[in-house]
Length: 116
Length: 416
Image (cartoon, chains in turn blue, purple):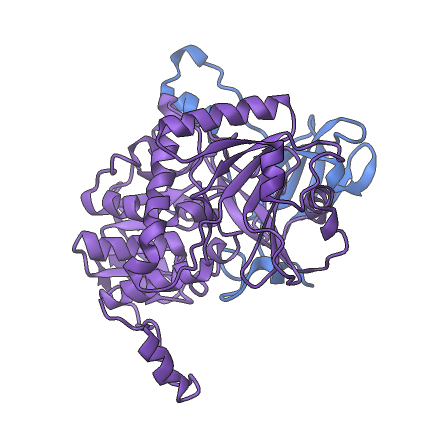
């Protein structure tokens, strides 16, 4: 269970929101010349990183407005929440403090990741 | 096959207070080179190694696991086995697994505690009835033993169920008597032990950090114990498959989400079958120890934290208590989450990819345990021959560009 700060209503429980998956997915501008493989990419393939993830949320049990968020999927920590018309924030220099590439201790589960 | 377990070995070892049982498998240091490397030491991965060694004559195999065997989703599921899927392709795949389950204890000489106690899928409204009856008909055409039960027959089978006095009354159910449960740890251990006997190196506590490729051809894996060379790599890493695939420059249509389960305190036997309900999202069975094993849903967003949200458990427990009022005051002992990799059509991917020598067995989403032996069997065939088995040919990665999806959202127990 995580808290999400809706840019319109403030901090609320995650159960009030619905995830809309990856953000900044652009519909192809040249649909006529697209191959089946390209269409497949657009329809079915989404990024699934363990780490920085740009995603869309809708405050479905609140203001019903869509917004974007940047979340570290290995800890569920939300790093930034921004409105859809705002520029995509840059987190390319974000360093995951978790040691292993999977974000977990060498033995054990991801549960340790959230302990401070 | 060496018979390690028998009535005489139990008697013999009891005389020395069970302190002299040998190790079930070796813990070798990784060699420099293997013919095949399997990434992921769960049931599917260990099973793949076992079938590769047993049926395909490949002996120089390593299984690399980042934690201990079965520490991922093999040890985190609710152990339900069934094959009542809608489409022909899925029915063949999942029933291939059920048929292997039926002889697995015998094959491995290790008790899987496979118990064919039947699986019920409840219908709560007109639409459910139509959908489930359609699925029962499709199953019967594929030779499966699924049948439709009316409300009274359901009540006879599970007397503790509240069928009338609830918001979504129970109107009937699909029933597959050959379905059931098995002991999930035994699956990993049984396969590991027998694969080890056939010469497979099982390397635990060794994380694969990346897959090295050169010009669309695999070269080996970079691990925490150094680089290991191999020309064939099978990735069976469930939730982390897309992370590993990315290191080889391969994109997969997967999304990783936490899926939770919980068990109650042990009680006397009250429910001798598996009951699942998609509509109110509750499924429950009782383990041989007497604990209720309850499966909850997936969280509604991508995450790699093996926890899951409380609201998801709350929803499931609410439905369980309404369906079985006598569970209302029970205490839950443990809750856990596992990361599942979900495909857009709720069917797995058992396939080659654009990179030569790289194979994926992933996308099992919320229901991979039931398929363990079948999945391992056809995946071993795919790796050994560089061609899919006819059972897993439809589960190729290419279906996401040619549109031949196998949509099993209705048959998957957990909505996603």
